Length: 396
Image (cartoon, rainbow, N blue to C red; front, side, top):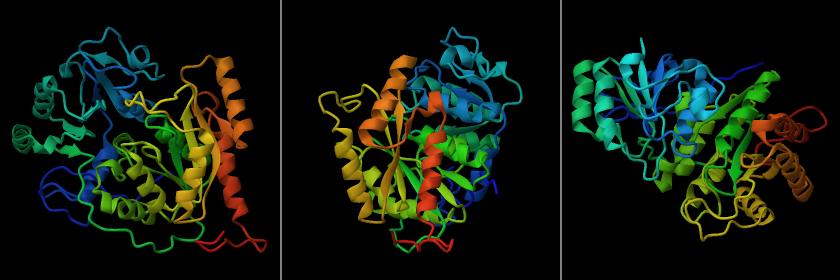
């Protein structure tokens, strides 16, 4: 039975009130469940990228357009020459680009659509955020610079009865318990050779392909953009390190009624700065399978240009080793990001990856996620014993 819901995941913060349950902060008088419902319920979103409309900085906006395009009323960038999002970002949606909030009617939320280094709200945007609140919009941010730490904006939101939602703010303070998950819940985690190689997109595309085939699959968001798309999840890179495993474990347990869980990956196991969040996901989600993601032509760690990325074979071996410390697991497929290559070179790179690594491979942007969905289904089939029952959780 097809089921694309992600029920039960913890919600983000809208203020400074105590959490209404472990890990789920809530604003004064507003249950976290209502905030989660609000995130998924916005239907007239303005996405702001004002002055930052580049593929790297505006990746949140691009993903919102790709996966929630029907809910986006406009992109706000007063400095852009483009008339629509198709021209500005190359995403095939009919969404206008506007220069001022007054140009869109009946908007219900302003989503911050950028992820700049340092995660700070541009100071030039503060008046725009205040204008949005005065015009009756909630404001949603995935940045490390929390809206709810701005006293003036908080005061304005209280005056106008609007929500300020910080999807990264959380109160997770529970360690992992390592109890077995429900037998028959198959977990697949996307992993990568570096940051920003498309792990979220690969997870979403596999989940959508499985759901299209009638399978019961859910996407579990672990980053700000994924949470803004799906409405819920765990901001793994903003959870205290001792509690990452526990937060991810709770996210999985709240969704283990699904047959397939596609867990969004973060960081890289070899990244000098962000390896901890990768390991927390591997041990918290206890995946059965991994999909290895890499960008063709990227040989050095993004942002650390003198740090080489280890060979794919070494990374796959390392990932399987640390994952198996928690639960039997192996890499089942490869997602190649060929965005910088011509169609012919992209096809050659995918063939090379499959031949060299001995795994099914594709670029989900160009080819769709069919071969990776096949690999996930094969993972389930291999876990079925001859009498048709499922192998008990924790056994091979």
